[in-house]
Length: 173
Image 1 (cartoon, rainbow, N blue to C red):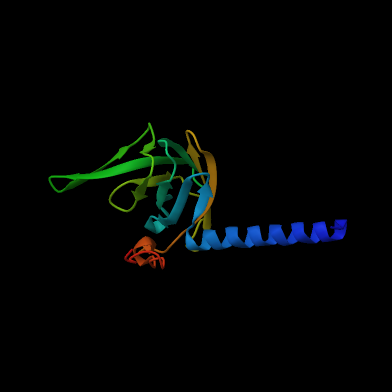
Image 2: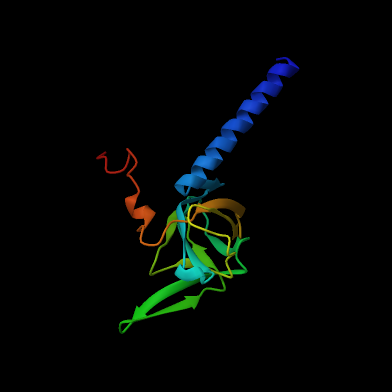
């Protein structure tokens, strides 16, 4: 292989990688870090320029060992925290999970409205529907994973509920 052919192959490989990363961001994933897979990611901003919002996603741990989601950083927000929402006697409350979220081996953790979610405060006033939020997830064992999470409009519903089944899903074996 000549040097010119090697450069062309490298350029094509980088172009394919960039295109697949951009497509993953637009679709809300999937992103992969070893045996950790993140998909169905989306964000919603509070109305009226409140500067708050939430990120929702699904994390799959396909490995044979437990892991822990230690932290989430969103560079366009002053702070982020993982919260759990519970309803008791008809009253909803949100509690922070400062120790992170356990990811048992061969399981998934689903973050959706009304349950687990990533809360953002002090969100940049320039952030708007259609933007891609730069999100970094930090796992105890797997390391760090960078995502670009799409911001969807209020009232758009949960994009994960509109998720089309993969051909292998629902097939009888």
